[in-house]
Image (cartoon, rainbow over all chains, first blue to last red; front, side, top):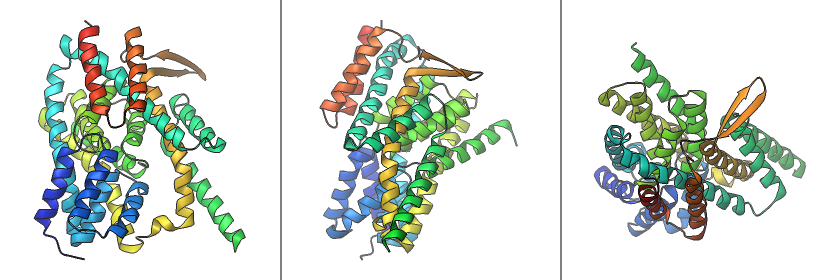
Length: 182
Length: 202
């Protein structure tokens, strides 16, 4: 492991945070690219880093920044990489939010957002369809997806209860299977 | 404590809580913000949240972070706070959403960097994926339908703020199809929606 300066770490993640539009799935390749190009993480370790960042709670790109920062400069490194990654989007959103709250009631903005709103909903719907397809049509997965959808959207159950139930049931099943295998 | 400080504090813990349960990245956060901030707390309206969801996808950075930053600002602003206090709101929400993954990731890297190879871990992740797909679908449904429960009887109606006419449904269908057909075209699709709104909703 090499020692990378905190400032360098900050700048690289700053660049990633500032220039990748489209969220985690677009940022992931950008982060991978930077890490490999700078030889900050051995190529063989990369799949592990990505898998961990995707499965730990939180934002995938931020998790990658935390992980890489820690590897390169310990605890301070993870803080600096995270801040580097989140400061540019934070500043941009803040500027838009300040600006938008003054103009959101004007007729032109209302018209534009009358078009943008259904499109934004369509994008989320499309993403849902992509995730459902990724399940490979297994019946229990589809059942789980659609019952979750109904429970949250119609019964207005908190997603937290559903996630907790899924975690507990899956962990218990895995534990029992493991014991039986032994 | 002043009312604004209490709201800031509540906002921080709401987002910390959301951060703990964010599995599956940015779009999953939308579902949690919708149920905790929009429906349970009623701090912002569904239409405001839809605007936030749209803008979060158009600007650089992680969608979930953009969404949290903006929601933090909007919650305080809608409660009548000043620009400065609303800025604190966005900072509180952004920090709070990152904090749980910060704690988790540092622990994992430090003590158990191969955690994802454990069979129990893999089973839990495999089971979470379809649930998260359902959550994200619920976020979309929540932006389309208004559900109100009166003594055990649900009253379901369309959310007029987001779907004001048949044109909205055409745009919705086109956006869904385009997003499934073209990879990485999110920003272009949203900009096309903005243009269509400017021309078609006069």
